[in-house]
Length: 338
Image 1 (cartoon, rainbow, N blue to C red):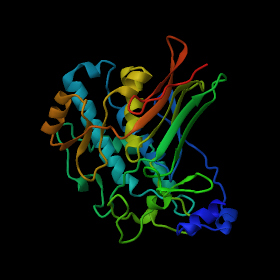
Image 2: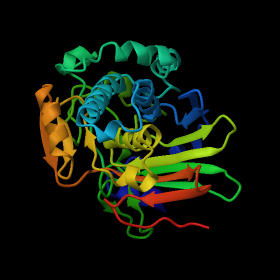
Image 3: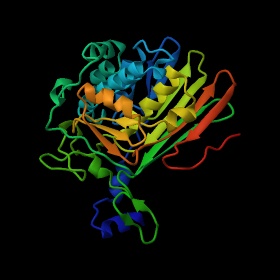
Image 4: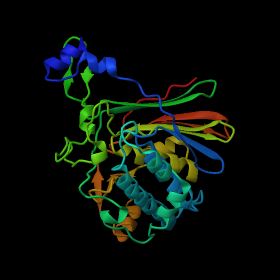
């Protein structure tokens, strides 16, 4: 039925497309984030490798749990975070579908502690740089999207799920099936087309060109963190297009480095940078003193009244021996517990 609905609206999906499609059950990326913590995320074509790259850079800096209480330390944290974002989005342009492009060595290097260390050596604590410094090809532009939802789950046995789904942009293709009531996606716009600007006004990335049976690059970045005994510490994920990996990273770091609980970590004002254009996007409630320090280092800034990303998360509170959960105040909703 939905085949006919799509074709009646000019789509080219066929029954053969559905018959020939094979679901790919790929292995998760598993990394030692610290001596005590192990991170799990999805591999390409998602942005899980980008998220791990950001976490690896920041977790090995010598921040203390009190660093957010010092204006000097907190501004340094956010400067380093933004610089990590910029390096991360330069590398994101090289992502593609690993079933069609050999990305094994690229991803292995990207998520390694050694590579994160080499990037930390390029981060200057007192200044930022132009896009090219981060290894960015200015012909490859990034895209934003906003038709995504995420749910984080932990059951009574300690099994966890971080699930992100999307129809790409807001309301997807803007087409609703007359008989099915399905809002059809526009995931094809997540691909790049040679010499063409996409829906969001950005240029193409060759590794993400359309191809038969190929999957487009996604910003989805689900994250599960466990301790060495396999006990859940965090279950995180987000909606918000390109802001997904930067938002999940900020929440994870506020919780892990500075001992903010999951509600404080998620509801805290956030900043974002996807390298091009070379400017920080900050929420209007973000600390102005920190922003002034970032501007002093050369960062350009732009305010947004709406954060554009929504994080859903669960943490295990060691002292209370309880799971705490939070739904982002930016969207509403409430966690459901047992």
